Length: 423
Image (cartoon, rainbow, N blue to C red; front, side, top):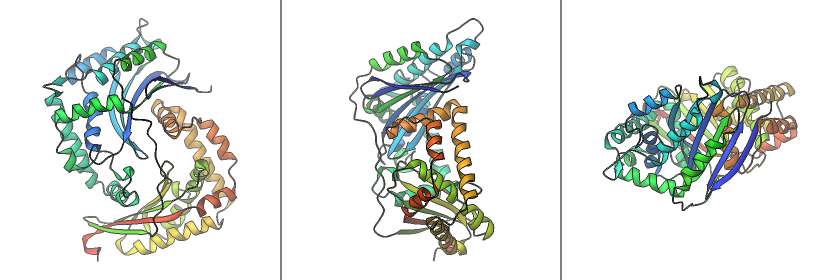
């Protein structure tokens, strides 16, 4: 059965999206606060959803909150932070079983919504700031997360590469900020930032369930009606402009193998075509990069590509022996040249098409994935369903893929290498 989708305005910069899928056995509510990425506020913002998800004034400790959630058949409340284009998204999510599965017809979705709303606008406050004990715990977790990024060398290389790929753009900022800014956060500054975001951030509320919940929407409408809004405007992202000269950066670190990130920029507008081109090029285990650079020539331990449609950037991410970075780069460029010349088989194209189709068909299987799909759509100002995008994908031709490949321009080559190999 087809998914029913509806997005409506609840208030100043506040939208409510309902995604109804009869197969859903749970109800999920996600409240996104969307704001522009900034090095000064990234860490400050990042800590907020984790504090909010752990307590409220009515449930002042994590034990109190968990006890309440247990009474709601094991409902959950979680916080998270993510990056989309030039924006930072602070998310508070709640999930519970559908009311139809309760023993006595209990309206737990409504009760869960009240708990979520309470966590959002009625946090546990002490001396004009977040409750100090909870705050210090979450601050240490944030610092640990930032520190852990350094230990995961692949993601660390990506983070460092972005500083150069998106130089002087918001997208260059790490989603959790940096250690120097995180260390300066206090319970009071975090609380002041929270109040500011409630007033100014773009708010996207998403409900996913088997049936509409008017009572849930009513509770959330009333929740935000109590907030004095001074909406700053919808968040958007600008496509990243290609540099006049290729930016080449090599940094030393304690790594056993080099990590190389190559970034190509494009002003090509058709996202569906770019997704298929990317799948043929490097996004699948049957792609040209995997089959040739990794398998046939053994130049990389891993080599794959990904496409950021909000910024118009295609990445090639690889793990390479220190001595092979030059050879790997040359062969990656060679494979892109082959794409531009149409040197890929019909079988490669159709296998890639099937891979993308399978991925998009799976979007509707989970509440979080379908919610993320439509959040991404609303951020881009569109509302295409996975089925509609698949219809477009089926019409993409070889010529379309060649045109998309030709639009890619090498912008940045970043290499994280061992200290003894940096010369």
